[in-house]
Image (cartoon, rainbow, N blue to C red; front, side, top):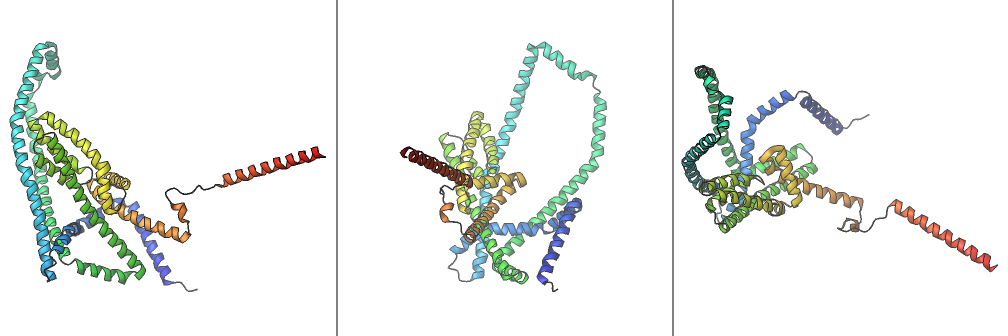
Length: 421
């Protein structure tokens, strides 16, 4: 009996996958440690690839505008430099609006809060003078005179001295973490620039490796899915930026109608934070309400109510249509993807789950169309309003009804024949 090599290969892969799955389930602690070690090793390159993918969206638009430059290498370098400069200018513009206003707001609050505390203390003193029973209850409850203040001070100093080593160790750990984060950021940005500069070469090398490992049919399908994923994610980034601009304009118009301060600042902050789907704008709401609170607390409350109204309209009408249309995903499934992604992975899951759901939706639609064509299902059954389909119960019921009517008719004819005779 001759055994096919492909069957042996598939069986070997299946056994290896089963062993790996069993190890992950039975030894979760070691699997987690191994995963974290691998992730810490490759995370700068994964993050760099993600940065390159995001930067590639505006870079392609800039590179198309530089089509008159015939040297491809020079055109690519200029497009990368211009993309990075544009993003740096946007970040500097946002910080230039945000940081001075935060400084002024904190300074104003530092002057307002002591006055508020003094006013609150005066009101409490008046209340205690008007209600002697409350003052006596507080004195009996707290019993401040019986407290051993010297002992409390000694224990506090001892606790602080014992914790000093822990604090120093934590400080060293924080410094090491910050240094590692800076190094990883530099490596990620350098890797992203390299990917952008040589993206065609990297794509060609990936295709060569893929065709060398799997069959041509499967390689073609993998490349088709990857191209669909690339198109979907690119459209999602463009749609997300468009939606953020629309939301910022809506807040600018609404704040102008209600004559609120800091219109440009709050609108830009909300537009930037809205790049995180659905929940990102709430960060902008907190900052905007914080800015307005210093000038007019009542206007801050009005701003929060206005934000909730606009956010509901944006989440249920604008966002599903703008982002869903850009990636070919119906609005209903955009809401489902945002909710599921947020529950599973937080804000990052919201960003990732929408294009992933769009790819799955497109692949499932292709699979469904293919299966329907293979099964030969009539087109009229797949319309929005298909024809009424008869069930077996209804057919049986109609047959029995016809038989009953036929028997009644035969009985009636027999009675007529007997009368005639």
